[in-house]
Length: 78
Image (cartoon, rainbow, N blue to C red; front, side, top):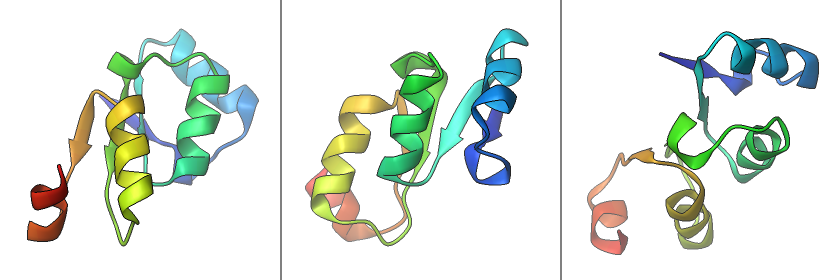
């Protein structure tokens, strides 16, 4: 199960989520940074694409174990 950072990105909340054994779901490069700062590993992190740049897609590929693509263009880039 993954917690959506967009629901509440407070570092204290993320620490509780991590301590309870949940993964984290991100939708932006900023949320990927928050996840890393909170100590989530790549394996514990997923990324859902939504109107992102090629650079952001590459960052997601490096930072998340699961990347949810939402267009043929993203699949081609992947």
